[in-house]
Image (cartoon, rainbow, N blue to C red):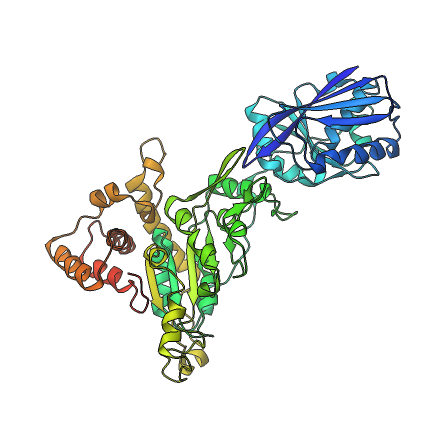
Length: 513
């Protein structure tokens, strides 16, 4: 007898419906799986046989052929264990497959028949709704994640036995109620009020948060660069529900979603070590998976000790910074992952860390300092809007009981500036023009339209362009930065003081412009 159960594969960040067909026939007891399965899918033969037997059902002593259609889509992972087991039971008349009409089945089986977690549950549940399925049977630990998708019956399953008894009508499994994203609590992070001194750096990070700009902090060890970066998410605008679902989908596919958090409401903060490979940073693999730049989507990518990263690793950053997406091409096709993040880099001015420090002398030669600084290429530096010096904190400020502004106060100013940008780039139906959501995303056409200068501003920018030797990219980035500073001040026009502040964030020490 032939049985047919529906499951789902994940390709990139999208789901693809898979038909699991099981056919029994004469021959030696053996299961053959076809349909472009990987090693994990092939190993499901042993898991399914043990799970069916240990769950108290009869495993057929006949030849079994399992087809995963469409055969053109590569199947990976153990998510097909549960539908294959149900297909075997249906093909041997131990289960009526009509009970699974309009249903999607997803789950890994352990040898005792219990159902385990699988990655990518959110995009699979979204695909089930798009393809008009009424319900999904999922591992109980993943039910809350699948329940983020409305208008879909999500039924949690703890074991194969439990599911079969439910389908036979002997027990009833409760439907998981649709998850309310607004009810998820946000976890507090580092607060700007905890950081003593560094008012100039705090202001620069506020500007960066308001306009989505990239930042490079340069200073000696212990000056607070890492602390400043880790406090950055606390002043970013709160994520909308759509943004939270967008981020959660990436973490679900990457299997990086915490087991007790169905929806991520805090903006991501990723801080990979400098030994990371370029595939780990931008994504890759035989079957491409998201890298750190995609895991930082809608949040912060913090690269500490920036010159210590490999030259090839840093250079592959250039395209994601500019295009906000990563396209990974392989012989059998290409996948695109989102990568709309804010880059925060931190570095010492030299190998010993004390070049230019007023108290501790630098032990590096001039050639060593120059060589160290030039590890970061000019084209990469050109893509960073804000370059700031972070000097050592004076004792009086460290020992003072006075606290600075809290992150919530700064965040309110940032959100007001972002609201001005939403109005500027938005349209009447709520969609953003050309996908531009903040000032850093503006292209030359939008810069020309929204970043008009008065006569004094044009003279100032002309003088600065000659003195700083600004490239065309740097010229536009100065204007975008000035537009953000004007938004923070609540000004419709860019005035000379806004432009002057933007120009002071250009690099002074480094070789790039």
